[in-house]
Every structure is written in C-alpha cells, then in structure tokens.
Image 1: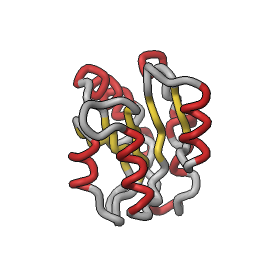
Image 2: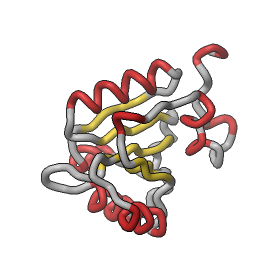
Image 3: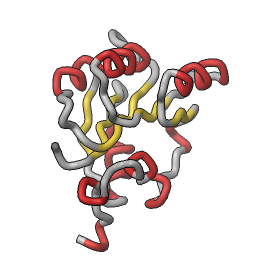
Length: 134
C-alpha cells in the first residue's frame, strides 16, 4: 500500500496549486493531476488517502472519473469540488458513494481535523501524521 495522501484532480492550474499548497501546509501529502485520465492512468488498488475531484473538466468529467473509480472497485474516499454544483447534483454524487461535495472550492478552509476526515476509516498505521508529530 502506498503512503496516504490527497490525490487532487483539477484542470485549473491555479486552483490545483492553491489547494495543493493548502493541504501541504496542513501536513497532508498531495499529488496533483490535471485531468481525470491522468489520475486514472496513475491509479492502482494500492493507492491510499483520498481523491479531491473537480466536477467539471474538459474531456473526462469528474463524475465520469468517479464512475471509473467505482467500476474499478476503488475504496478511496472522493471529495467533489465544483463552482457549478447544485443540490440535485450534490445529492446524486453522495448517493453514488462520494464522501463529500463542496460547491465552491475558492471558499474552502481546511482545518487539520476536517482535512483528516476521509482517513478516519483507515488503520492508524496507514494514516498521514500531522506535521507537528513527525
């Protein structure tokens, strides 16, 4: 199994860089991908952590990427980010098994406690350690 980390998939380089910085500043390792296809090419059943997935991207949408992960029986929790979401879309993704859905990524604040929620179901030995305890 790989070390747990956030797998951030977003076509917008500015959003990708800002969220990656935010996660890393909270002691959470992060790998970025500019499209769903790139993430799926890197995906293996041994990946650990969570996926932060933009809903709307050119080519493969976030929802299509999520569907592909479901078909592969991925156990990674998926958090959707979008500036274009609505309540029915959020409900639909959560019913399909998404961990969370955030409508506006530009207003997301990641507290150390909240950012670790996707890892709560993982064994302690597989969870990322807070920066202050390394």
